Length: 181
Length: 287
Image (tube, rainbow over all chains, first blue to last red; front, side):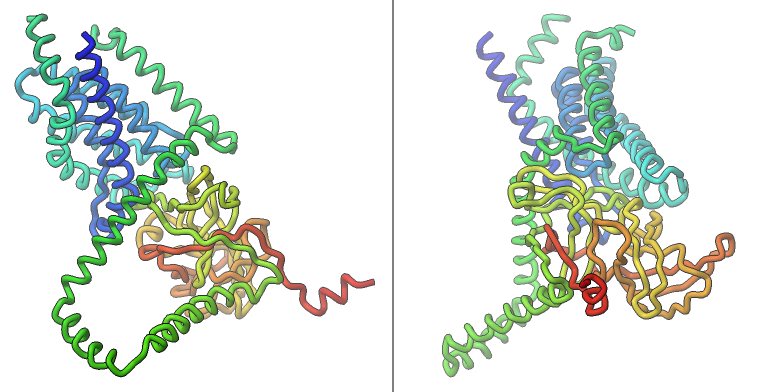
């Protein structure tokens, strides 16, 4: 029992550290290199999805909230929708993984693509709230597509990070699934 | 349905909604978002670390791309070093430093007192349209909200959020950062505005310029006396295109900012300023 708690604590600490590093990279490192390209990467969304699919609903939901708070505090707009959005993504990707067992990576990629579309819509809402109008073509060209393309490309790169970080609780999850079956 | 009635879902949804409401209330009421400021303060060291990594990587990239050139230059320099003393290097450094200080003092000359804190850019907003930058100085260095941020080239924006060791700056390329400006040559007054399509290209525009204004390409746009945030006389940019607005009977000028936001690294946060009074103003004040 004690060992289980320690493993969970270790896994949570690693996940939080990953989120912090991803957020710092997203705001300090990547903009310098992606400025000349068309892409904008949402690493925190990729991480939330990876944690959700590798570690389950609770991890996906609560780390999603944490990632949303980080994203909105450091690079956000003021009115904060990302904690709610990331939480829903993290939770429902874990639900999908439960419904379609043994197909984690395809589920991750498919759900990831839908989530990125959702993330683009959140950005559109931010634009609408900040300007009071919605110049739809400009928003699609300069906001929606860069996030969509950049984040979709980052999804398969981040997936192994999720697998690695949730290794401490892999055995625990396996046993719990065995028990249920 | 069972996934929506799940205890984890209900708890996390409640928590997320509470955070959304709290953050939004702070924003709508226009008061400082303390939780966000705390997160920013905690994130600042990590952002600093990644900024340093980025600079180091850039340095290595330049080094390896110019190896041959550097080798030849090195040989030439070795010959010269044998003839020159360390004194020359010191003198060169002093010249460089003097030049940078002169540029900085160029700003100060216009003001009786201009107090500024120098700061380094730690991070930028991750989207292409929301133009915020994060600096490595916060309230511990005397920085407060609404303080103007400048470089030796011109205006960058104003401080919109402050934490203990970092602050966030809303740049003039941000949609709602309207700055009262005037054309230095003609004295016509207008206001800056930055639609998304222009912000993406690193441009902004001056709106509400009178129809009769005799603008020219290359005219310098500087901050005006309207509002309390910005000191007047700071360069905002230069006119690159002039268009009439048929509906409002006004002119709109597209301007290229004086500050290069893509390579922005070092800035000054103006913590206080008092403009010099002209002779006529001084006479008017005296009884």
